[in-house]
Image (cartoon, rainbow, N blue to C red; front, side, top):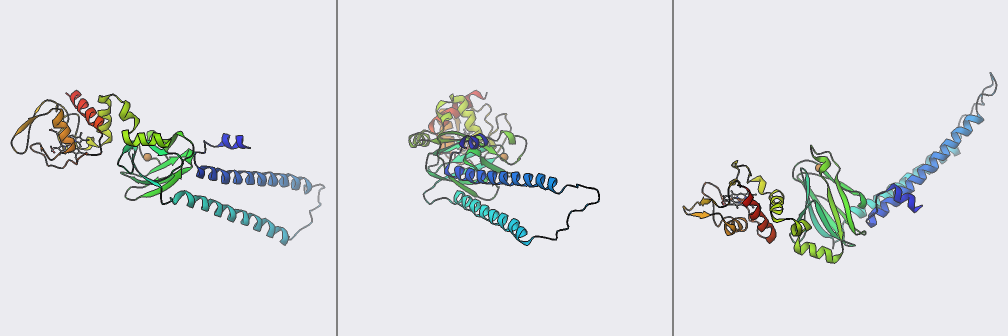
Amino acid sequence: MNWFREWMMPVAASEHAIKVDDLYMFIFWLMLAFFILICYLTVVFALKYRRKKEGVLTVNFSHNLALELAWSIIPLILVIGIFFWGFNDYVSAFVAPNDAIEIHVTGSKWKWAFEYPDGTRSIKKLHVPINKPVRLIMTSEDVLHAFFIPSLRIKTDVIPGRYVDMSFTATVPGRHQVFCAEYCGKDHSDMMAEVYVDTPEQYDIFLKEGPEELRTMPLVELGKFTYDEAGCKSCHSLDGTEGEGPSFKGLWGRSEKLRDGSSVTVDENYIRESILNPSAKVVAGYEPVMPTFQGLLRERQITGMIEYLKTLK
Ligand SMILES: [Cu+2]
């Protein structure tokens, strides 16, 4: 009956997913058996005890202790069994082994961001190595979201102000879909991501060289992407509005007055330095509050950022 199971369920891409399906199919067949039994008895009794002659009443039974005990105790044993079966699977999914790779997941309106143990970050694309236990440590920046990977059969609420975790060992290589399963506002239905189950070599390349868009996106696009992803947008506007930091509009090539009274022309090296060592040259009229992006942005992202800034006339 494997085809039936595969027809009913998405791919089972982890050991846990197979366990969930085993339990699901057990409950399914058990319920089907009860359904048939109950329908059968309903029809049989309706025929057997139907009114045959006007005025003739069915013999008046009081009760049957053995029968009542049987239909109480047998289902009770079944549901207790199902409870422990399910609980056991739940615990094994949520308690990670000690050697699990810990990946941080942050939900925000309306995207999922991931951070790996070596500091690599990715957005909307989660990379995990195949056959290695992974522990996701999750939180939300704003509202309640829910992280749901159907083919791994895991799903949990992601709550602002606290961490929740989940673990899994993916066994099927390739791409799997992630959804947000909690209505979280306007673009909730767009709040999707993908899990890439990589071979160890692919995973190493990902950690070393970053997500694919970083290698393949044209520079200007990558700059725009980084502007959104790395959070520059929370302090730097694109339209000239003053934020916590100067707007990026018209930044390229202008002569910037610095706090210490000197001035500097905005060129490649100045932008690079502003990103990696923001307090080295502080723009007049601003506080030195910008965090350094040393180690967080890769070389190509910085170049992309510079090319993008050039387009903001
Ligand atoms: Cu959401």
